[in-house]
Image (tube, rainbow, N blue to C red):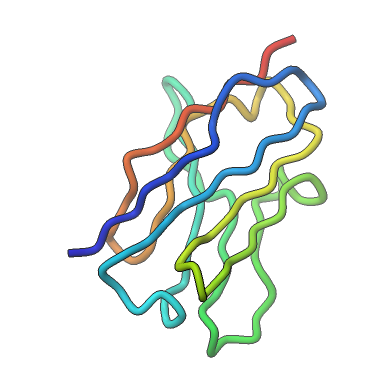
Length: 114
């Protein structure tokens, strides 16, 4: 079955950086569009970034709130998608989830402290 396993979350100060990873299995990774979502306490889950499959030349999409600070990438040889997060702000604190289709990872917590 499809499994998505996130890693790389943690506690970071304002302005710091983190790189999240999502290792995928049980699917044809190169054919899969991969997305990152996040959910903060009391808020709805929101899309953060999407990177399209190997057959789609469309550039990645980003939420307006992270444009210029976050970068999504994928390694089709490693079946892994990444989210590089720079210039982190307190409002970036959330559980970050990897997604493809109706499959979700378990999430990884990102906390940005003053």
